[in-house]
Length: 511
Image (cartoon, rainbow, N blue to C red; front, side, top):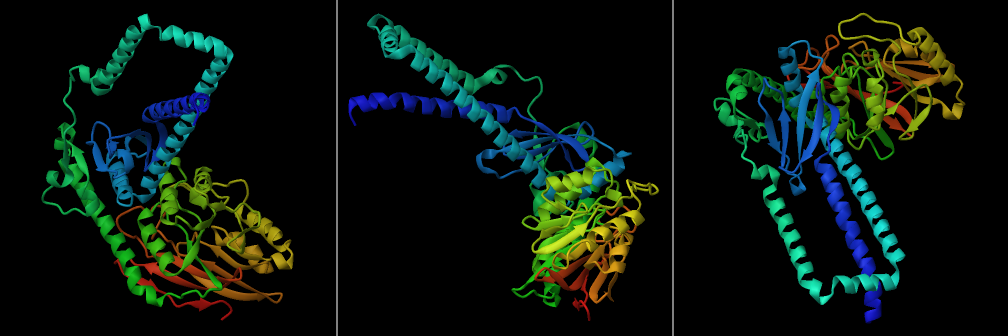
């Protein structure tokens, strides 16, 4: 390459290096100083990235700090500053947190998503800053012109200034090196010694721990020493929860030969309803879906107990366990308030809202429950009554042309599909709400086959709250088989409180 080409390429190489350096420095600085307030578990929390290779939970003044290795490239970690919650008392709060922690995949996925979003945002900001600096430098470079640049170059490199110039460069480099090694914080004497960490199993040597708990470390100090009894209780609650739900998940493999297996022309969906915050059951449900060849999840509502923002963990868990699935969902009467539907949409779920929609070749119609019911409170009317919703959905379903007939209607309360079923305007009508299985019931209306079916409570809920280390009732999921977009049969799979799993017979529709 000639000298002229080298001279012409040099500015572009310099600008490229300037862009990269500016982008990396600005992006990295922004990332390590970034934070976001989100809902994690049953709390509001502030999440901020670190490079210590650990996920650290700061639980406040009463409980000790906990940390667990992240095992991520570059040692990227996260600090979670756990803050306020709506729990009425400390015992309720600790029990709730422990049960969520026993099935942490959903919350881990949410934190990973937040950190990834921070990284992308700061990378974009860094690139924007780099581009701005390059544009400014290039503009100045062009404005100076060749002659003026040559004059400045010779002025800077005159023999009498060369030594001074080099000394300044060396001095600046030394200062930057010293600052990066020691930093202001290392130059000052710390008032408080660094946090000392000890493995949780050494704090409670008499207890048994699974692989996940063995990697948990606890900050030493007053709160740890004074709260050993509390920690022991929490570990025991965690153990009971993981033991039951782990057993249920393992049992699915044993009963898998009893599950109807789809052929190449069939599509299988898994139906869940009335989980009521019981994220423990999600591993079992996902394993049933996997063994039954399901690719679609149908959620008939009541994923939470009161529809509050802190219950986002329930939707996070569903999203994480059914990653890669298409999800069609409605909100139940205990999900009212808008938070749950918002979480579902943010998670990529198709939330039915009275408009026909096609997913995986299946034509759906449905809507969320209009009734509002809090935890332990009476029903209150929403924008419409159940009776009005039933009539309105029937009008929409019956207005569809025959070649676009509704294959599956999904609502929470079976009363919401009563008019559609009576008029024969949908092939399969699904619901939950009753916490018991009803159907499948087959009928023929004006020569068209109609099947109604109500799924039992997936979360094993006796009432509106099912988060716990045991099932209050059997937890039911249903595998629904479709052929060319039309339902052709179903099969129930039930988790028993004892840890056993029972499989119902495959029931072809119309039989």
